[in-house]
Figure 1 (tube, rainbow, N blue to C red):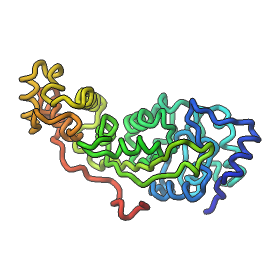
Figure 2: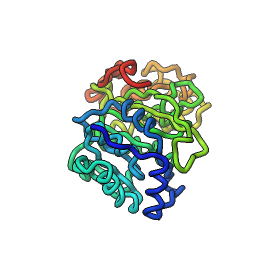
Figure 3: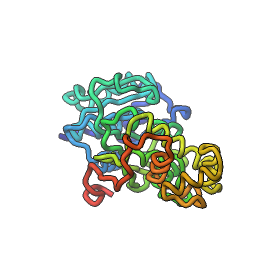
Figure 4: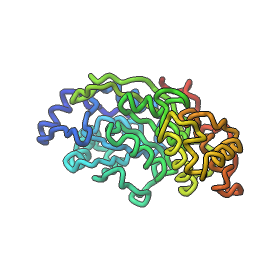
Length: 310
């Protein structure tokens, strides 16, 4: 199967045809380079059995690449003009594939599992910088069926998502996304492959959900862990003892809980891994131990990165 992908000239012509001007409020920058689209799709590892949710399909560059792979695609587009045009663009490029495309004119942050006829197995998207992290965390929580994520985001966001504990870019997004799975960088993307050309580079990030989660995944447990993450990073330079003092009731109680979780109270929150935050909750008496296995080494659902495009 080979679908002709959009190029720079065609994207600009299409925009003029529908009298469309990219809106900064929606972070609209469209990929016009076919090789970049193929790179994203290949790195995602999707195949014909996958149902992919795409956020912000825009004029359809990545959508066509996903359909060319044989996947079923649910494209969620907030801009009504683009949402109306997308099925026409796909039909013009490959009429036989239009049956595998569903377009929803929705705000991705309000999307619920009940809104989709088929639960997605993958998320592949060029995420607008202003909603990248909220959209990613919302979809991972709302759709446990999503096993693989491949997103293109602003380079700074990519660095934060993939940062390791203790690093300068490690923060709340880094820890929270690891609640769901393993995170890896897949290189940079030049601004020149977009229209309009943004002022910053983009980065590719892949997330593979744990095949067997090392900890409970229910909403109540997740919210408690995320609360601890927010506390731990609220004042990055504080020791963990001081950072968690209000949550624990006192500095001494905070130190006792940290020690019970095998965490040095003198460590700063910015050095704690997701497993540390989970263990702190489980051993603090704030959560029922019977429902909470201790964090273990996560087991990935997908093959190693060596088998994928880097």
